[in-house]
Image 1 (cartoon, rainbow, N blue to C red):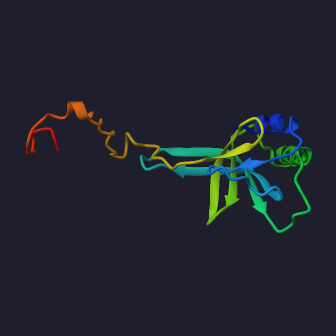
Image 2 (tube, rainbow, N blue to C red; image 1 turned 30 degrees about the horizontal axis):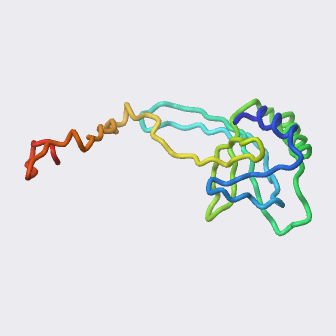
Image 3 (cartoon, helix red, strand yellow; image 1 turned 180 degrees about the vertical axis):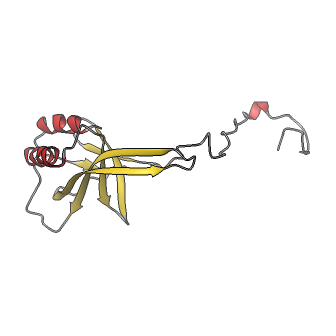
Length: 155
């Protein structure tokens, strides 16, 4: 989800809620402790130089149960970050504390912002020797034989 989409959704809300991939809600007394731009310059395993930029929100839950972040306050924080840090309309990722800091994508279900799971991937699969996934045989395609011998196609 891009930053402009988040601001648009926030304008429609009376309260902000984030839902974790397991369905649990982030405690409603969370704080957005950071809004920033993260730039990642790297070389993938195939030797290609890459550059990625994302907007980062860091969510934090404290023992401060009396305060709640309202949509207009988060919009103000985002707009200040855009102005001071020269943040463009980039994809947003969210950091949230679990056993360690988790990084999540972001979506919206009409009521809650959804923290979506992110996965690692090889960006140079064609260059670093990772074989293409082999097609899986359907049970009906396996030859009917009593024993399995090398080269028979059943193993």
